[in-house]
Image 1: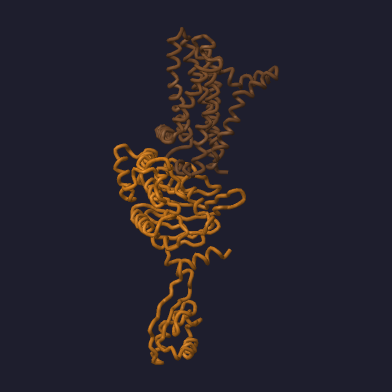
Image 2 (image 1 turned 180 degrees about the vertical axis):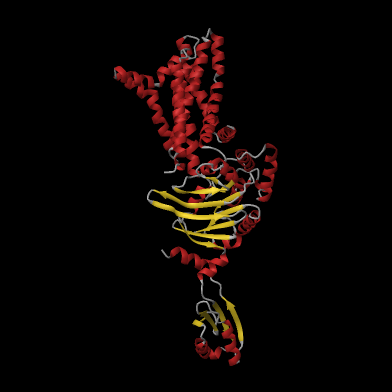
Length: 241
Length: 311
């Protein structure tokens, strides 16, 4: 586990060495702040002390931004050959994947933590359902974990960052929209399965303040699946036929 | 720390990059892997360092198999991959710290190991720069430093001197030679003088097979069964007469004029016989002045070419 921490630390520092992290945080706060406070169905239009507008916009911004953060992580290392150097050190493939996963997660956590002033402001303006807000943040974190895992998987199967980015978006869009749209066109078991696969139903119920074990299971199992596939595609090189 | 390679095969699709090779490297030996591009040098190294798995066969590093005890082996090996991949956005010292942590160098030793590596690899001037800002030679030194940071018992270096200027090459060779006194080293190269200068033993590998194994002297002897000498006799005007007399000597196989000098001859003796004494006697008998008699060594280049182009 010690190696996971070392890899995560390096990965995290490299976010801040390049401009990636600053751009990500500024743009994320900019977009989500703009739509939460100034434009569209913002808080003043709704006229309620709720962070719902923030969560629904962050739901989309994270969908776009996370693949941009993860696309580099394994694809670039494969392209430049540093992955070979890393994997011939005393670390396992799992430790590499987990290290990168946590580095990215911590960056997202920082970005989310920086939106806490929104929460404080809203709480000053009017009575807030505190439980719903914290659940909303939990939902954001779970959703980010899912997208990071998907992004890492996409990054692990190619050595081209753009391909990794587009592939992650492509996989992500199924969970974001397509399963949802399809589920309304099907009835019976197929419809139910598709509806269960759609992320919005799980996210909505969490951000309303209902934490159901099925929703947790949904996010955690996709995360685990993504990480496992990433690990498998890394360790493919090392299988005796 | 010994390395035993047993019937190792690696297939990529239908192509056999490494084809059933076996060899062993003893503790404290510096072994040079020599071969044309695409001969299987790098693949073999990647298998020994546990980066890719063999299709067949096994490698034992000090009794640990690459198929089972990868973690144990990885701790003992320092590896410099081909093209020396590094994180270009990291400063040299941070990078060495990162590698030292990954290789589980104990906390109290990390700083002393890093400063030792900086000293040994001559990185002192550049240690605060980002790796991406360094010249190729310094990057190569960083690559060597990261390979040795945990004081591994085995060093595997894939083309360690590629891209260096002649002075740096000499330095790196000296360094490898120095390290080889205490460690087991495998290095690959296609620069022939390099193996001669640094290695105790040479393995020539071609299309996935080992075609020669031994010290450079052994390889030379094996390649040229005949003795070859250059002879200069101080009688330029009697060139043809000398030639005729030399041809009559029983132990001489072929005589040729040397293109470079008027009165020099290249003499190949017959298999397993020496003509030097007879040449001398001939000169004494005819009262000719023998001004030069030099044995010609077969060049490693020739051996290499002979072994790697036959099929």
